[in-house]
Image (cartoon, rainbow over all chains, first blue to last red; front, side, top):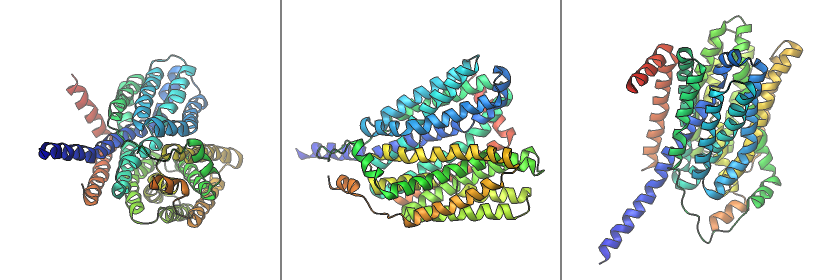
Length: 413
Length: 42
């Protein structure tokens, strides 16, 4: 009599045991597509500007708007994911993202293009990016596998960045920008389907109900939340500055227009291995200390790049080293957020930390142009990036890596 | 599923992604991949 029940229990136990693997697969594919497609905006600059009669500044404003909307809506998307599940948010985010790209592909005027790519694209990214997906993985994955699950998710992001760019570039070359953007929209259309795999374990009935407001006040008054924010803002600043201006800088240095593309491809390739290594390192050592090492090595790489005579070899070597440290900060910072303030509001709290990243990115993208226009050189911003890197390392070295009461309450529940 | 399996899976993803991306970055391969998909889709 007991056998059928026992079998049923074992089967449902095994289904629950495998549920997080499906969530890992679905979540990894969602962020691979979402972040991969996000990277290709720049490729559309020339054809779109020519056909719609937009200035480069106006196109740049659409991309800047996308980043800003993404950053500002991320805490809200994270909060919704914490409350209703990442599945619902990624599903909706995917639909908005598809609508945005389709609108941008079909439009005849610059304003609608900006609404499609900038506004709807930014909202779509907030629903399908790190904060939402990593919060799902953080909650769905057994504690002993959490570090590796985030390493896999982050590696998927870097694979997306590295593979979608050349495909989109070849598409635009052969089929013009409108069909190419529709192909990208079709790829993003897979996200709502993949989001269905993002199942999370039901919250325990007796779990202490902590509101997002309480999570906000627990982090707002915590010194280490601001240190983490400052560190992550540095990351955004450096990445936006290097990726935006290094092609122009190399071209100015007499290395030709292709050197920039070669360096960006090198960064993309070594970023895959670097993100994986950072994820693995974070599952073995203290994340705050691994992050401090990442920022110290970034500073050293920038100093060496500035000190050595500029050549294609030195630029590629810089790309290889900085690529190793490129987006590896994301799984480390996300895991650290979960360790310190718990998983219950991970989407919201990591969303708040991510606002810092996007503010840093906004400043990095702007500061390069400002410095060049004012002083005819990027060097002041390079020095600022080195100083910020050392400051970020110091922030992570003094950060106390200990679960806060809000995280402990969750564990005790 | 053990940590070892996951580590191997993530390493395979990293190496496979690097190899695939490396191929695609040479324009010829990206174009070939697109043509193959378009042929498959009729």
